Amino acid sequence: MSSQARKRFYQTVTVAREAAGHLVQLDGRPVRTPLRAPLLLPHPTLAEAVAEEWRRQGESIDPNGMPLTALACSALDLIPAQRPAVVEELAGFAEHELLCYRADHPAALVERQKATWQPLLDWAALAQDAPLVVTAGLASVPQPPDSLAALRRALERRDDWRLAGLALAVRVAGSLVVGLALAEGRLDAAGAFEAAELDESFGLERWGADEEAARRRAGLRAELEAAEGFLRLLDAPSV
Image (cartoon, rainbow, N blue to C red; front, side):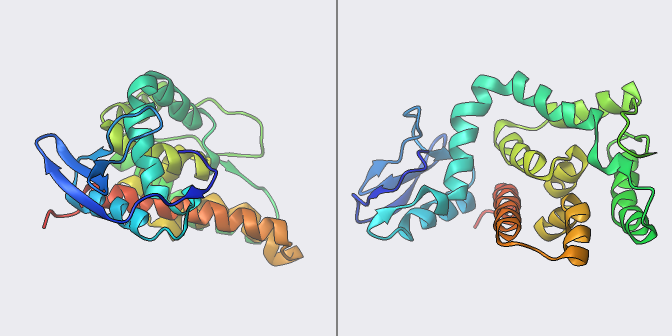
């Protein structure tokens, strides 16, 4: 979707059930993605949530207020055309997994990293069959090839819709483990934000925040909430 606001041109928003899914319509005409595909969603609850984003628009359409629509467009336009590249990109996060690079001081940061990050790595080892190596400092440490392969499989087995939501979570968090934990319900958006921003949060607690940092963090939190909402709606019970 374009990030530029444009004048609202429709009155009613409806969802039509089709053989292939659920079609969001404006005044009876299908919403279309940037590549002109009909906005056909696989789950009725997600379709209604996307429709509600369009209903909430005022005199102008603000794409920044439509994160579920944007993710749906990504699932329809971008993921099918770029799936191998997306999997490759996301798998690359595991090679330098954020949670594996720990501070050696101060003691309070060391302890917070261990308390927040180690349970997620333990989860990855058990749930994904992907134990990862932890190190102190920023020097790159190679990860076990079998673990990297297991994490790649976790990406490859997701359909285009779930891969779109996961991709947003991983990119925002800067961590494949955090993204997978969010996608599989091990973390919610607040927990994912806490893990991804742990070092930044620690620094801000000591030195204080500025307006730019606050805006950046609010944007990251909102994107993680969008990814979580999108993924949960895909798995919501059908009414």
